Every structure is written in C-alpha cells, then in structure tokens.
Amino acid sequence: MKVVKRILAWLCLAILVAGVAVTGAIGVQGYWMYRDALSQTPLEEKVEAVRAQEDYVPLSGLPPIYAQAVVAAEDRRFYEHGGFDIISTARAALANLRTGTLAFAQRLCVMPQAAQEYVVVHEFCHFAHPNHSPAFWAAVEKVLPDYRQREKLLKMR
Image (cartoon, rainbow, N blue to C red; front, side):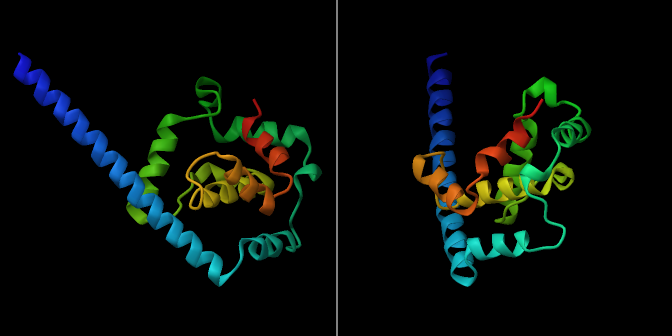
C-alpha cells in the first residue's frame, strides 16, 4: 500500500511539474506572439480603427436593459455559475493551446461591441502579463481607459 501511495505521489508531482512547464512554455510563446503582433501594428492603432467605424457605439451609449438582455440570451446557465463558467473557460483554454492563438466563445459575438473589445484586449494583454498584476491592468487601461465600465457588462446579472 505504501508503494502505491508513493507512486501516486510521484505521478501527481510529475503531472504538476509538466503542467507548470507547459504553462511556462505557452506563456513565453504567447509573449513572443504579442511582441510580434505589436511590432506590426500597435494595439492602440487597431483599437482606434475599430472606434472609427461608422457603427461603433461606446459603452455609455448602450441602454442597461440591452446588456441584461444579452446576458439572459447568451448564457442560460449564467446564474448557476455566477459569471465564471469553468467549463467554458477550460474549453477556450484548450482551444487556445491547440491553435496557439486566442479563441473566444461564440456567445461573445452577441455581446455589445464594448464588451467584446474589453474581452479581446484583456486576453491579449495576458500575453505580456499572465496574471492580473498592476502592470496587467495598466496595459489594459492604456488601450481602454474605460475598461472598468466595459467589464461591468460581463458581470451584469
């Protein structure tokens, strides 16, 4: 029985080490992708191009009922998981790992453009800052000064 416990402990440790190594490798690769993408076109320039589009509507221009309707329609389990769906998050993470790119849930397409921009910028900034440190939030705020308002669209119940 002790041998089985030792084997299981070593196996768990090996899985943990492998997970940390894979996460680190993906983080480094993500940073390289982020750096290369920004060297071609700065993120601020891309955001300004979106904002310059004729159909762009800032978050402040959306009625609150619209955001509530989007949440109600796009995620029937929203109230069960309180805004954080571990199943959807794991599915998106696996898709990102497989493709080496950012992949988003289809339901993001039906969200207000302000919320879409927030999610894309938020995830893109994770290439440079794989956590939610002050540096991460500063990077988000540099691109989206009103990110706090946009984030509220995702947290509406």
